[in-house]
Image (cartoon, rainbow, N blue to C red; front, top):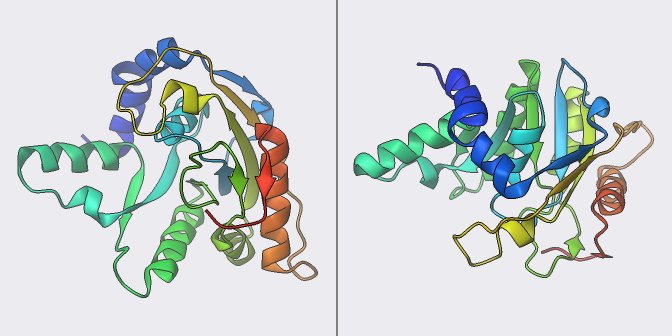
Length: 215
């Protein structure tokens, strides 16, 4: 069975129903997500579960860039792990080499060139103190190369469902706020300024405090 098929089985049969009971997600602004065409979904990052929540509530199939180590574990467990990450829309890249950034951006561009949705957390890693930090410029570099729409998304409450350092999920309520696509003229706006504009939009949607430093 092809990975895209498994994506929907995980979403609607194997994982999604459980997540809906645990997280009780409430979505605002879903009408801002285009029904077709290349889109970049850029969200804040509070918990490991964030990507699963995005897959659960957004109607289109999402593609993520993931480190290759997730796909290289040996044995049966490794095979199951590779299958799960592939089915969940993860695309492996080599994070050990000097060209990792270029490979990640090329992979993202390929997802968008096929008319897909690339999802990313611009901060690059989870916030352990609920504070949003400076975004990496990869999102806007890809947007400038592809012309894809950039959709800011604010996640609220995922850190209570999936606390940092814990493998257990706690019942609660998650809110996902989808903003309007950003309209940026890259002929007039620098990539760094566009990235800061994106993070400010995400901060407004997520209700987080923001500090101008990298995580």
